[in-house]
Length: 312
Image 1 (cartoon, rainbow, N blue to C red):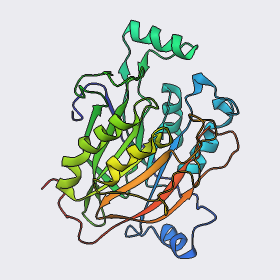
Image 2 (image 1 turned 180 degrees about the vertical axis):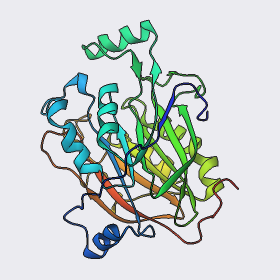
Image 3 (image 1 turned 120 degrees about the vertical axis):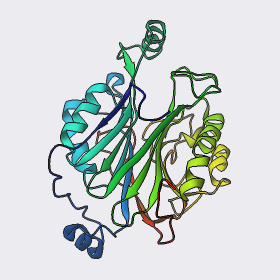
Image 4 (image 1 turned 45 degrees about the vertical axis):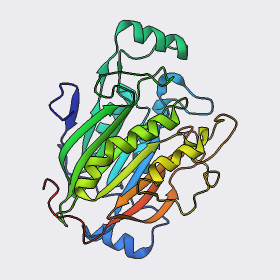
């Protein structure tokens, strides 16, 4: 489905982009490139499950005490994928992050589904669902296309489920053009349900297959809940996606700070495909109450042989 869907929200930046805050651990050469505005530098991409505020997870600060700190931690990235956003959290991030276009999909919840989800989580939930958002830096990147599908046996049906999950899950993706290279690539975000990791990762693989094959490069970001079914991760790896982390051991560098089926591990991921090549990976937040997940960041270089026309 494309951007003409009435529930799409694409907002253009109306303020000049702020000078990015520079991470302390970046090598000096990368810092120099940022200061000079060199668009040939690697893309800095970040994913973060920021904890849905109505659920108030144990150990996570109230939203009012963490929203600006989260914005400060992410605003120097070129692409930001956030999960578990409430409507208020999305609004606050949009207000705090100048210089980005925001792609999201918020869909009204039917009354019965709203009641079921509120009962399940024991808190009054919002009247619409739309936890995913992609923030795209406009000085570096241009959005050419937007699409989405529901992670279910009937992906074209809004809010559809069917693999044992109660919460509808979404795959959101865009075709971007790097303004400096003229190169096109796909960037996608998702949040896979803990109860349906295997079928949902297969659906993500299949949903992105045509687009990444067409342009030859892709970046996938999100909370994949892989520790609930580690072997299911192979659906992506066997299809040509590469984990930006340096080891395939999902127990290394855990990103979830709570308990996940008794198996803590690295469940938040950035993967690359084709001509998009990872040149670095790191955890980009601390155990300081900002979320029950850690942010992760990767540097991604688009190879020169990437296809120049993203719509060809």
